[in-house]
Amino acid sequence: MKNILKISLLLLCFNLFNSCSDDEVPSVVTTCVQDEIDTFKAQQNNCNNASVKAFTFKNTTVFAFQDGQCVSDGGTRVITAECNEFCYLGGLAGIVECQGEDFDNAELIEVLWEN
Image 1 (cartoon, rainbow, N blue to C red):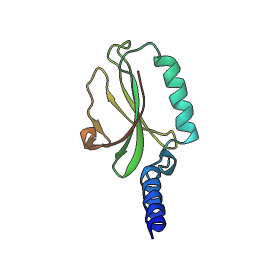
Image 2 (image 1 turned 180 degrees about the vertical axis):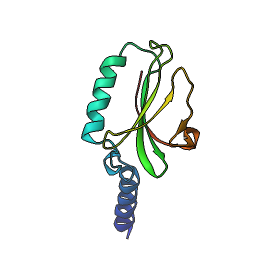
Image 3 (image 1 turned 120 degrees about the vertical axis):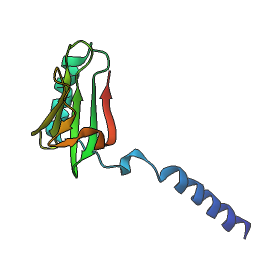
Image 4 (image 1 turned 180 degrees about the horizontal axis):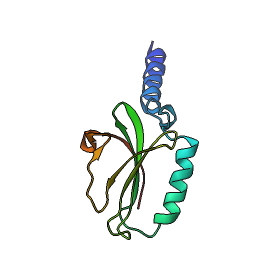
């Protein structure tokens, strides 16, 4: 009886530690988005506060490429998983709306890269 209890406890601990592995979380990054990220990273490598983030916005997964501080009046280019332009935020005009809705309503999924 004690052996069964020990084995059960061991299996329970094993399942607890393995139930949240990163392998179970599907990546939202498509091949074309990864290519865009690689290019952006090379361009923004020496710029502070540049980032790429995945969001859910208007029931769509979008990717925001925020220029770093080495670009004055820089903004944030937002694309879809198919690499289609979705909108452009910030810049000289300080645009905050994306397709008629405030981008503050977007839900962050994941920070994919930041400098």
